[in-house]
Length: 552
Image (cartoon, rainbow, N blue to C red; front, side, top):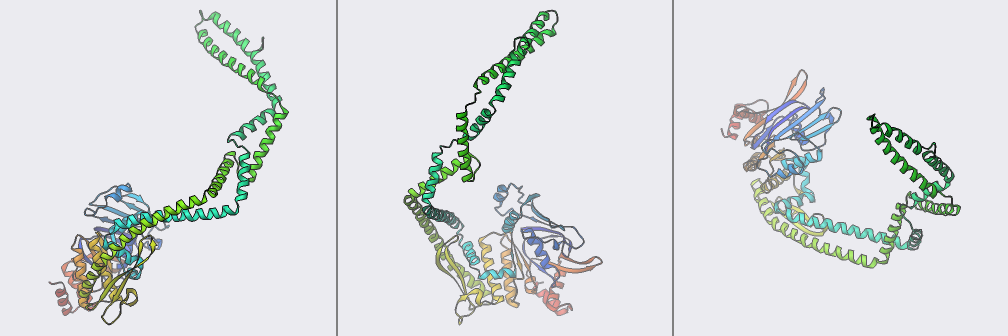
């Protein structure tokens, strides 16, 4: 339930902080007073796209914040799944817009993506506007209504899981068939490429090793000279490092008993001697290994040229990529060799998935068909009470091909009287009739799905008098069942039945026009409804009529 709404610097609203109550509330005000502005602000909270032009002129930031009571709704999993703090008694949603065009969204002070804000908003508030009346003729909307009232969500999810698997398998089969067709035309070329790479006997680290061998062999004389000089400087009899170290060690050892520091130096020099001796042995060993072999160098160059040519031909840079190309060619050739068996396996798997989808789609159809009778019965009852005594309303289901939502085409068929044939509702119903149908559907849906807040934006279009009063009674009934129903209305018959009444007004100030919203007292309600009945000149008769509507 929406408990509190705060709006700052949004179009004509300077600052609005208003508490909202449970049950059936009404919002009234003259055309242009700002009712649509408040609805627009709520829309932004529900994840609609923002426009920096909606920020109040002369300010740089707009803030819209709402507090919700979620204690009666099972929304804990949403907060846990998205790692957001959860307070069932006070869930805070906030949207901030800046004049530079930046937008930020928060749920309980946690920054969130706009898509996540919209996901939560869809679970908290259902805004029904005149624009939504256009949905009545849409196949997907009608199907969604039937599914909601059929309570078939578990069956629909199970079907959609299998349908997704079927769709993926169908795409896999199509991709395979296209690949096989391409390969069939190029099989000789594929075989030639595979043979070429296979005969090359590729080894992954071979190129790096051979390039190093070539470098060593090409510079063998320089390397031998450097190694010889190093060995000589380390081991020469008189001036080599090792003989000189031995002399230094002998000198230090001779004084270690009388000069303690010499003992530490002796240990450190002994460590150096061991390391240098080891280096000298390694250098001598490599000196013996360095040899220039013209035949071996020629073999290495030929092998590297072959590898470079293959890399250039196949447009790769490493032996590993050549090996990967070879394995892909091998896979394609194997696929061609076993094509009949592979295709048969995929087709069998696809057939199994189709059968599973068909079974679950049939189950969905039966659930939908079962619910249509109850939908038709309730709709006729509700519409008759809304001034349509001869109404006919039917839900037709036509079988179609398997789709992501099943195999059913849904159509709402409508006739306002007995003499006219049933036709699709969007083709024959007037604006007032569509408003009554949508209200009846919303009343039915609200009984099946617990939406915390439902907002009707001028759903009373095209109706008046007793019909408007009956529409108000339906909204009043909806608001009595642990729900919050808010109606923006121009009709006094609807306004009078609200448990709570708010008025939106426009006021001229030195800084410009501002829009305000306030909770009305009993006396203020009488005056507001009297004004709705008679206009700006409020007569005593209008006051009396207002009291009668309010049952005062």
